[in-house]
Image (cartoon, rainbow, N blue to C red; front, side, top):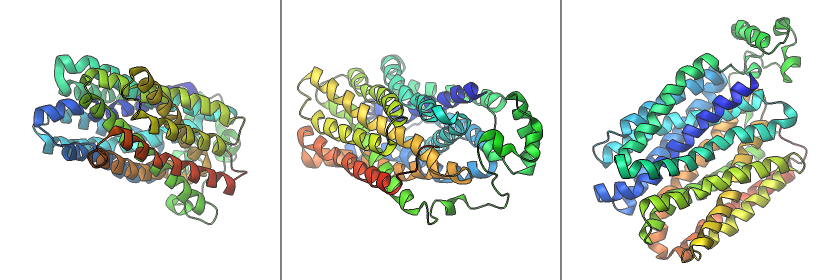
Length: 427
């Protein structure tokens, strides 16, 4: 069952990654078809990210109230329908509205999948297993670039969104039938007793544990049925400072990531590359992020995870600053994009794993979702201001070093969190 959970959550975040990247990959075609200005492209990018932000803040507490499984299924159906409708958008205004709807669904899928996979992973290997699961997101981003390069010459940009909508709607029934609810979530809740017994039998456990000591079976503590405010846990005396610092790190990370991923294809296309070639080069960002995430997960088992992630942010900042100066050299450009993803996506994936173990069970989904929600606010700023900065600074050689600054701020925030929570490991 643990394998099933990880595989299904992998598929959810992979489709999430594909859909998130879709607008960036088709941006050159949208710009040409609808004669869009950079500011209008920024609104298109920002609409989906605004939906992601809303979805993160709504679905996190929902997952802590109605369960992880139900929340994931609702999210997947919502973003599948939204993507299909986006493929039929007649103009930029409708496209923006539908990207918002799709984003709301996407905002609930990823953090809840992270939470559920964390709760079903053995403690000793949790960082690596959750990282492997979340690599589905970066693989989805990368696969999106390759698939978009194949689809766009034949079916145009609309075909990309048709593909991004059909897959989650096909997956939704499998999630409903195969995905189990979190045992930790069901702990101490009488109305989940029957479901918990069935899952324990599937795991080969003693169903009688449900009545008295289920916490021994899942390694958690019973959550009182009267606990209705998981959000309050994020700001109690113990978690308050850590919550705020982690939010700074997430805000800055997604700010710079979406600034780069949203605008790099357009910058490369404007420099003379074809849209398909620009999508392929840009896809190196998430591909290397998968490698970086695995490296970080392995290191986080042996070294303080806060130290590992701080170093990863520093690597990202240095590489991003070099993208602009490297644009005249194809080999050097690929190398800088590769190390940008290695550090930045690797750090973000590691931060997702860290925050999933940072909070207690009753607030875990809210903690993950709201951290990502705050990060989405940063992503909106990054995607919408990228064009303005490029126009203001007039040269990628100057713009990309400026783009790198939020990664340095994230490094400082993560380092400070580590100093304040030295004994707090991923659990």
